[in-house]
Length: 138
Image 1: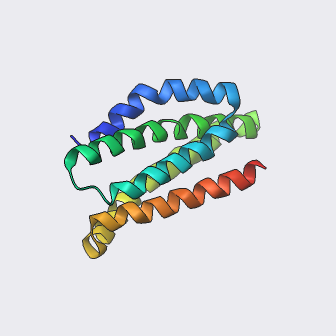
Image 2: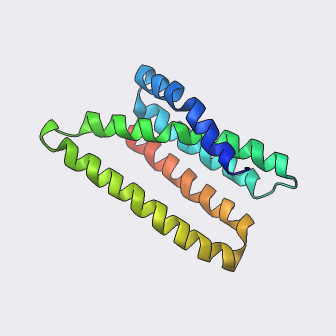
């Protein structure tokens, strides 16, 4: 139930953040969502009670809700129409590879380092991506 709060938040906020992306631009929403997701991952490794984790996972889900609409909008804006379907296919394949390898590798790393450390590792990766996206934006 704790981890499903992220999915619930994403379901509630995806269209709202997608609309925000339409207004201000996906190139601004994407790094902001990555930054929020990375920032909220840090305290998840420090929680002391289930309600804290549930709240942080909910906030995490709000931030994640803006990632896919922003990525898809950027793909649409940056890809020539003659190969748009192929590029969306690559994007979808990369998502599935990430889901598989992330769960597989994450499970092994959690067994070695502990589940708390996984939140910190994820935070570093997401914050690095946020910085990278912000630099690309400029």
